[in-house]
Length: 299
Image 1: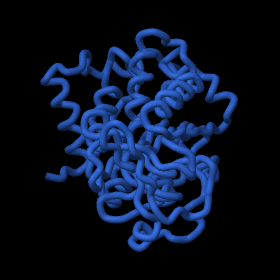
Image 2: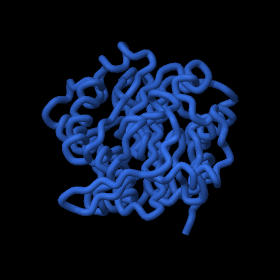
Image 3: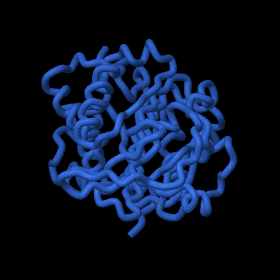
């Protein structure tokens, strides 16, 4: 059953509070300190996470969405999100509507996608889409008021194209082999673009072009370079990049609350390379300031 976004938000939050899965479900559990900052935060503002996934045969995508949702709601780690919206079988209409509604009254937005992808595109349940379409939906919902901070993380093949810009079209996926069955999170470009509404070169531009219109500050992290496939490790672990990211955050939250965004990114890169064989890449706007910030909440 597909619920509208408001119903999904209410049911997701109520079920966690009733079950007692996460301590401190009251409003006081979020953004405990005025002016607190961290990866996905504006100072003292409203911070929302949108987790979108589309399996299209990838067994690890629902795991990615479910486990990130649990992590982001964990008040012991407390990444400080006021609201988490999720959908692990999202169509383009749902992705655009859910993101736009969540972002409409947000100061910062954490936007994540897990699924198949290729150069400049991601694959939803109905068709491929570009980040340009996501950006347009958000800007329209906010009446062109830029977000204070935008964080984008994408776990799909060739997702580095969102960080480093366009690259020659790659016609087919490379199959990654290993000790267990590992699937590539890639859709052949020729098939993906057939159903896409955005086939122009503008759909393949890097996210940085939106500075000043979509966001004031941003951090973008992709699961692989623009020339690499990304690995899905199966239902138990999910995407290699997302599995590594979750592990690094969980460990650092206990052992090193002073870790910077750069340090978390570097550790995630190393773990992803070890388990998935591909290299995450990132970019920050402005780079020096954001990468030096602490990943977790701080004053």
